[in-house]
Length: 113
Image (cartoon, rainbow, N blue to C red):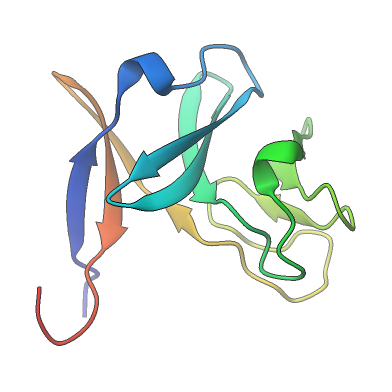
């Protein structure tokens, strides 16, 4: 079954405008990190799934991974894959560029949408 998303327009004034800068946005009451890598916007979870490190305090490496500031675990910006091999998964969010700016998709969940 295909994933269904609710879409939220991102506040452009709050978005990162420099490569590898990490901004924290509040989308639908949830803190989300956003970064610009190779000209593309990526959005991912605010906290590391391993020990709750604040991902906005991490860095983006040359390979396009977000590196957690606590234990240096690395996660792909594209899909959240734990590229340093510890077996965790960082939640990522799709971003669509539309005529009126970027929109972020949050997975619909539960019995009622």
